[in-house]
Amino acid sequence: MDYSFQFDSLEGYKEAYKNSVENPEQFWSKVADTFAWHKKWDKTLEWDFKTPKIEWFKGGKLNITENCLDRHLAERGNQPALIWEPNNPTHQTRTYTYKELHREVCRFANVLKNNGVQKGDRICIYMGMVPELAISLLACARLGAIHSVIFGGFSANSILDRLEDAGASFIITCDGAFRGSKVIPLKEIIDDALQTFSSIQKVIVLKHTNSPVSMVENRDIWWGDEMKKLDEKGDHFQAEIMDAEDPLYILYTSGSTGKPKGVVHSVAGYMIFTTYTFVNVFQYKPGQVFFCTADIGWVTGHSYIVYGPLSAGAISLMFEGIPTWPDAGRFWDIVDKYRVNIFYTAPTAIRSLMGFGAKPLEGKDLSSLEVLGTVGEPINIEAWEWYNQFIGKNQCPIVDTWWQTETGGILISNFAGISPSRPCWATLPLPGVQPVLINDQGKEVTEKIDGLFKGNLCMKSPWPSILRTTYGDHERFRLTYFSTYPGLYFSGDGALKDEEGNFRIIGRVDDVLNVSGHRIGTAEVENAINMCEGVVESAVVAYPHDIKGHGIYAFVILNMEKPPGQIAEEKIRDMVAEQIGHFAKPDKIQIVKGLPKTRSGKIMRRILRKIAENEVENLGDTTSLLDPEIVAEIIREKL
Ligand code: WT7
Image (cartoon, rainbow, N blue to C red; front, top):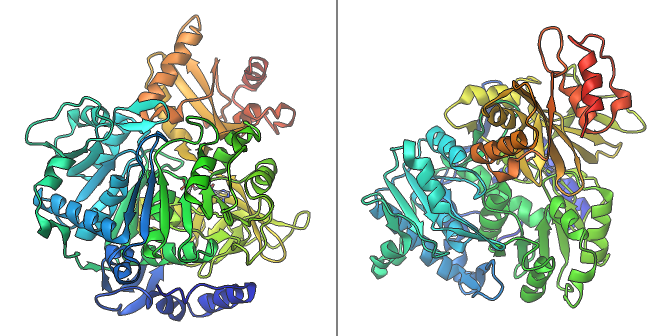
């Protein structure tokens, strides 16, 4: 494996950064040269953020799975590629070497092909964290089909929205998924979603939990039966030759308005940037065991369980279960059992484990750990210190990696052992990344407050794995990311910057919530609540939550004379679970008589946010409100 693009010192980083900004085309061509291509690209980069149009390595021909699998066979075919730890620690674990994973991916690609899947088809994947999930992604990519993974916590309604938007024609699912002590009936939920959606040709079902399922004739088929139909020839599958800019996958994510949008990533740029960032941020060395605790239902799992590590020829560990089952020592058992070297998780997981104290760590040998990482939300100092002391034993650098579904890979981070870990600071931009802080007037921030610049975090130029469009709606792509500050990509986050150019991420400045690492739009939750009988209107805001990061606070107006209290609350929570999923249920529901509105009828969320955050002394000017009295009443009845 050619890691010539791995820098190994701060000077090395600085030089790479300088080159990447002065001559991005030359810089990224050199990195791209280390990958396996059928034909090299004609033009390294073409872009404008106005149309917007972004094309990397145009004219290049390749298949990402030849980079994730085939190119490793000669040198490390018998090395583990994927290690799988099941939900139940007494069940059998599984390890796939690169050879074995290659074979399984080829076989399943043949199954897809035999069932009519073609290049460009959209395939929805709704599975638990089983190795076959990773195999499904790769099999789609080998054939050129576009996968769209839907997180196992989403409800039938959410699945239906995504199936429709993507125009999906195939589904891959499981009978059920294990999550701690629970079994989630995935196939049943898919059946629900399919009641009103008839464009699905085949549903491929993996038997995993042995939950009873109903199989629709001519539509539903078993993974195992289909694999058995293949002979040895099934072990091979000629990878489809893709254009660098062909889409690799769609992943739906929430924004501040309306329905989730399908973020589209394309083959080459995504592959190159996830590999580059994996190798540099974590300072990965061949043979190390890398454990990312994310779910493949979210982008972190796509980029840093599957594509980045496998393309780098790494050993990637995948865990089916949850951190607190059978007890709160589960992650540490896994680290001990597999001698994990690099551990990558979310602040919300750290905070929840912190609450159990040091007991779950007793007798666990964590001495294999060399590097720790966090992602998903700003990490608070208490969690950072606990992670550093109890897990890293003050010996492991902690990389705080800032990125988004839209960015495909890490954009701002420190580099393990190379640049300092600084609690709560993501610190430096990756090579090729040009962050800038913009004020509300759209100008670059030049004045410091208390020694720091503060503004809206934007990017001046494209990096290879920036999203290319939102599926089926390029105008929405333009409006969402490139219209707030023309000429710039706007992340939706606010940030601070020091004199040396280190960044500290503050969090979202738009109406997006970050609940236990799950991204949820306030508008989505409001839409769900408003579907309840008796609800007139609602407003949803975030408030700080000790474990989840954000808690969901819903202010709801009912049209009933007597507020029915608890019953209404339960109905509201059930409706949100039904429309979105259990993870989006409001933590607090306050039934109110009215909402603070401007004279033009706009809800003043700023005021509601302050109330939810308990900052009622500092509400700002409320005289312009339609009915200022309502604010006092909401505060009086606050939960
Ligand atoms: C939002 C993106 C990127 C994979 C997981 C989440 C927040 C992410 C950090 C960090 C502070 C962070 C931002 C961002 N975020 N990483 N290290 N420090 N905030 O992906 O669901 O697309 O959410 O997560 O607010 O915009 P996502």
